[in-house]
Length: 79
Length: 534
Image (cartoon, rainbow over all chains, first blue to last red; front, side, top):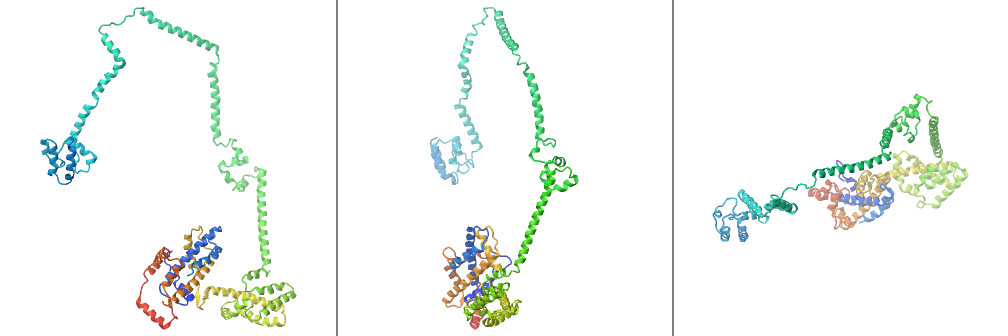
């Protein structure tokens, strides 16, 4: 997770995205938590997709399984 | 002696304290009659009674915790002496020495005693009968027996001639065996002369002489170059025939592959001009659906093309106004401005502009004169151009998209998405942690949706709190709602797990800069939402 000599995440981009979607400003360090949430989402998404693709007998992460799992994971992360 | 334990017990607690306490001495003196030794005190051994038994008892583990109770050399010597005396007293050592005599008593002693008792009186018995005969008699008897035995044996030998040839037989047999034994190790050795191992692998004999047996496997590789110089005459006919066969097969295979390639290429080339395949691919993109039929038409008769055109024109006319026309038209209608913008920059799009214009003209034409082939081609070009514009629009969409609130926002960089997913994959336990392009696209799509949803939720929370800024508390609330933060995990524990250290630092102690905050607040008050709170 730790990336040496690289910015951990595109802070400005994340801020812009959230700002565009919410039409609100973002406080200074809130985006760190947003990034944390995103990482958690990605983790669960990839985990579910990995389980799905494993069940379907694929060795790598399959796009199909990701697509199938995306909806459930999104609903799980619905606030 | 029975009193000494009590004396010891009494002196135990006092021994830890410095010596010569009255308690130490008094019971000892009271228990035993005073002696001159009692008065003497060595500095090491403080206990008053220096009896041997006392020193012995001191050696026992029960009293081991006493300080400095190691027996003095004198005590050791005394103990040794006592033990020696004891052993001398109680061990049956003397009796053992006597017992050696006693053991002899058992059987022989009786006779010996009898002999001793009788010895002075008795005389050695002189043989009454003739001593010489008695001495000779066994000697004579023995030879007689021997002679009988020898006679019988001799008879046996005489009768049985078989034992005699035995050694004779054994010798030649042994010789034979020896010969065989000599031969066998030769067989076991790998001699090129021996033909025993030949049936294992068939080889032409000439090959054998040429090369060592060990290089059997490698023979196949260097078949031809080796044999050609040595002479093709020696080559077995089968082999020489077999090799060309191989070549032939290879050639044929090559031909086949070449032909296959050629046919494939040719078919591909043939298919390339075939238009229907190409639009079929385009059909997946959907908006250009209606223009596909006119595209196929140029190969067909113009009448068919006209009919198709009528159909399309009818559809268009049925649609009448804008709303129900094909999605492509919708897009054009709504995004025409954008398309024009793009057309100025991109290469294929100026044609689109013309095409759109032509299309506008084409509708009129279709209305009145159901189109010429020229119009058909024009429309087809329009379709192609519309596809191109669609593609460019997709690209543009990837670059910048517009949210619900009409604000453009950039998409997440795919490298970032890939990085996060890769990190997640390593924890997921899938063997192959590669992420294909399709998967990455799906993940990007998912993360886009996620951020959209997240923005909406955060907006709801912040607006519910009547704020115009999304704060960290909103995000934490969201995470609590997502069941990410709960009794089992806090934000910090999750951050500890998932975030790099510098971000963790930021999260743990957000640098509160009140001056800057005020400045930003003022700026916000002034500019309202125009600027970001940096």
